[in-house]
Every structure is written in structure tokens, then in C-alpha cells.
Image 1 (cartoon, rainbow, N blue to C red):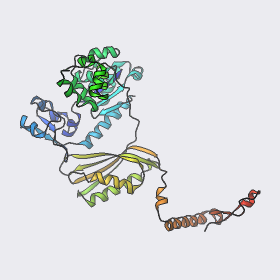
Image 2: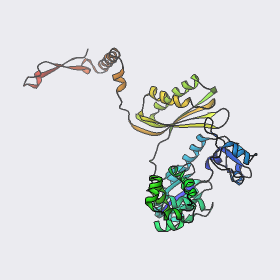
Image 3: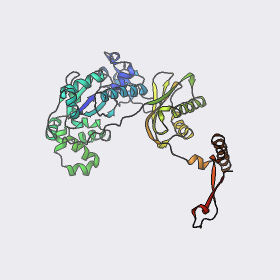
Image 4: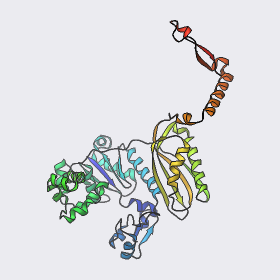
Length: 394
């Protein structure tokens, strides 16, 4: 059985400083600076005025003039969600995070540890330490649908196989398909064609959906019939980060030098153990309020500070306001560093000088025979000792 943990309005609650701050007032996440002017998650009071996530800012204010715009906090959201995932992994769950506030895991291997399914759900609720809706079903999509209908303290359980999942999903609206990123635009097209529920979608011919919508239509048909792909739990990761408090609101060249310092400190950490870095998260605390965060995946795993500074500097230019704090965190490591291209790219004279200095230090530490070179004498001789000889390295 798949367990789905859903924390409604997770990003809004973190940015507002807690769920208590959302009680009794219409609030919504303000658009991120430099991006399209659409509101993010909205509170229950704002939803009562007809405001919904993704609505244009002007329309949202027209529907609810007293709407409170909360500055987004992507850095705080990432930290809070990471703590929640680590807490779920602490009970033994192999978690697949969908997005902040939504995660799934398989409960079959945990029943014996926690005393049945009820024990697993109770352990997950205790680990989260915050209100969350929990749904259980034979597939990820069915568990998510159950979580949307569950109450804060009463989980929704769908027992059975794919047939039971199809029967449970049949009366539910096709709008649930928006939970999958690749299906976000499909419900609007289905509703225009008169398909309102998942049961009506499951009854359509598979070939017709493939002809009209392609692979997206086939995926939606499988989900409506209770079939879904296997879970893809995240691999255990190590958190390695460096932060720098900026004494003044930094921007421009000063911010670039701060980034170079962070990269140097990160590469010098003992916990890196000579490994390259594949994915990093660059974040900043803005002076005007809120945070900014960019996830950067390098084309190849790097350990060269110059190349890392070049790649991250392009993202740092997108910073919407002066920063008071800069942070660089490793999200995924690569293999041990073995790139020797910098040695080949440096001038011949500089490389020869480095070799001479290395030979001098080796002789000073281990004697005159510590650095020798092979000298060819008679390569075609039948006697191996006559083919080459050792000579001092000059």
C-alpha cells in the first residue's frame, strides 16, 4: 500500500511564519520578483473570495481587495521540507518527494516495525509534527486522491487492488490530474470535451485518447483506471553547505567576490572527501524581506572553483534585490575528482616548472634517487636490463 502525506498550503504557511498567521485573514504568496505576476498558494479565507493559486495578481486583488501578499520564502520552504523528509525517513520510510508539502512512501515493509498500517500512519504523523492529510491506496495517484479527501486527524484508506482504486476514483473530478506536472493543462481540455470525472475518462477508448492527446492522454487513462508507475524513492543524501553574512546590502562585484569565497570554503570542507559536485542550491536572504533560491545542475560534476564561479555567477545575476546573506549548499555529489584537463591546458613552460619543483621537493625529502627518469639505451635488445636505464630527472 502506498501512503501519501499531504500538507496543504505548506509554502504559504512557512513564508507566513506558521499556520496560526493564516487564520481568519485572506492571504496569498506574492509573485516572485522578476517572474510572471501570478499569486502562489492561497489561504482558506482567500479561497472563499474566489482567489486561487496561479491567478493573475490584478484579478486576485480585484476579487479580494483586502488580500495580504506574503513574500515568498523558497529557502525556508526547502529547509522545512528537508527536515520533514528526514523525519519521515527516520521511521524507516523510503520517501519519494513530489513537491514541498507532498510525499509518498510504501508502507508494506514498515507494518512489522510499527505494528500494522495504523501504527505506520501514527508514526508518520508524529514524525511530521504538524497537521497533514494522509491517504492510503494501491497506487500513488489513488493515495493522493484519498489524501485530498482525508481529514486532518482521520486518514482515508482505499484497500484493494487496481479495480478498487478505479472504483474509488470514478466519481472524482478530472481536476485531480493537475497534481502531475505533465498533466497540468489536460483537465481544461477534457472539461471542454464534456469529460468531468475520472470514471468518464477511464471509459473512453484508449486509442482515441492516444490519437487526441498522445502520451499524456495514455498516462491520464492509466491513472484513472487505477494504474500508476512504481515509486522512485530519493537516494540518501548528505547536506554540505556554507553561508556568509554580508555586513552591507551587497550586489554587483562585491556579491561576486562573496560567491567565490563560498565556493572556496565549500571545496575545502573535509566532508567533501575529494568528490566532485553535481547539483548545488544557491540562495540569498533579501534585505527587503523574503528569500531567493536557485537550483543549479552542472553539465558535468565539477571541482574547479573557476568553472563553478562562472556557472553560478550567471544565476547570481538574477538576484532581484540586494542580499544580506548568501548561502551555497550541495544537493548531490559526483564521483571523485579525476579531471586532469587543467594540467594539459596550462602552458608548457609552467608545467615544466611545476615538474622541476616537484622533483626538487622529492629529492629533499627522500634522497637523490627519489626522482628518476627512464632512459632508452637499446630498445631491441634481448636482454631486458640493456633496453633502458634510470637517470636523474632534470
